[in-house]
Length: 281
Image 1 (cartoon, rainbow, N blue to C red):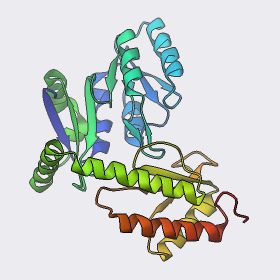
Image 2: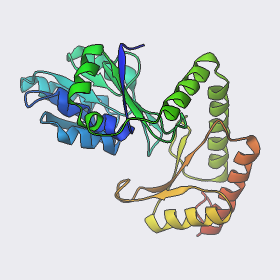
Image 3: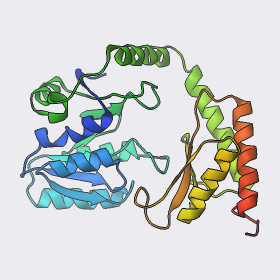
Image 4: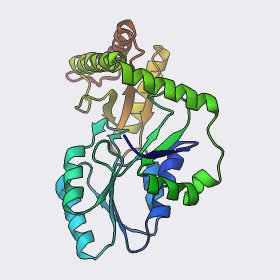
């Protein structure tokens, strides 16, 4: 639970308007290399000194924190996604917080032992738009006075705010939806693995199916749409060169029959394109 929150038209605005009002040339930001574009843009707009550490690599993060301390920076901020949207990788939050405590560093973007959290109302909560920053009252008060996306943009529609509050109340009252999501995620990940797809390991409902070749990723996504399964192929510059993929997002709203249909379509398309392990192209 935090002291106060500030609402934005989008989470992109929340991240874009976070760093510049709070940090100056004498400060430092140490940011994960795979952070969302909104965090990257927000960091760029700040005058603080910047370091970028390898994704979820605590040794690399500590190396840059030591360097920031050695350079005499005043305040140090660690910025990380909670979940990296293209990989489904969950940040090592406990270790990040331990390092932040050790090097007297603020930490943004993680839950629990944090100073600031930003988030979206437009993804899992289903609000279609909206973002927020939550934390200590003094910081939120400062953002209300100096965060440009908040000052010079429209506010959220009341209907979106009301719907988001209702969803948060629902999620706080029962674990039913979360339990269903975890079950759906396990079922779908296991099904893809058994079919022979190369997926990034993990437990998150974001499931990256690695295809590596850009044309292949987009062609396979197009074929899946013909089979009545909508997915999106991603390639450079959204992901690094040679790391093209299809990203699937499992939902608590999916019924088992939906997932079974999707798995059957993936198996058919994967066989046609020769991307299944053991299948010749």
